[in-house]
Length: 81
Image 1 (spheres, helix red, strand yellow):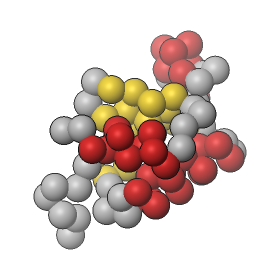
Image 2: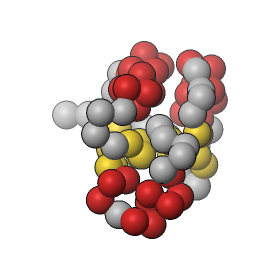
Image 3: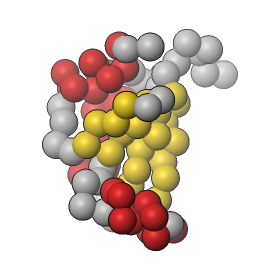
Image 4: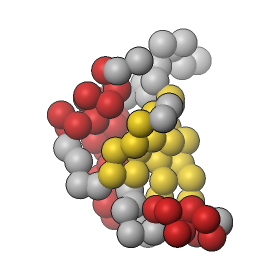
């Protein structure tokens, strides 16, 4: 059972995206307990238009972190409530 204080994130991704796999690894390094919801942008034309050139994108609440990002960026995103 995940901790109740574990942060919830959305990862905008698509099949075969090696950068998206790296982004997930960064999140797991910073917060292994994070609840990560992957959204495949290929399923939605609006998501393709918004994120197609920027994936991977991490979203927490109303804040987004677009690639490229590193451990410090992910830590900062997860540190804010």
